[in-house]
Amino acid sequence: MRILDLESQKGQDRFASRVAEQPGETNARETREEGVTSLLHETVQGTDKQSLHCDLRLDQESVLLNEQYKPESDNHEISINLMKQELQPHQEAQQARDGEISEATEVVETLMR
Image (cartoon, rainbow, N blue to C red):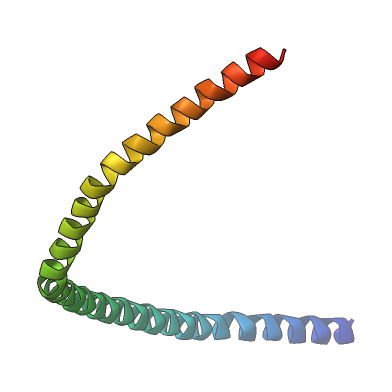
């Protein structure tokens, strides 16, 4: 019986030892988690600041490029509109010819029947 009591006591001691160690492990884990959370929070805040700075720089660059190339873009638009106006009578004439060809084709097909 004594061996059984001795083994039982050893088991109880090991269990008590593990239970005693757990709060230390829990505190260490909580400390690590707090550190990681803090680091993540700082990283997110830094990233937000960097993103905001980058957005502002991109906005400034966009305004600058727009100011730089707007006159050129306006000139291109004017040129395109002039070309459209010049081509419009030619397109209308082509459409009229296409219509005449379609009518002539129908007449020929009717005569061939």
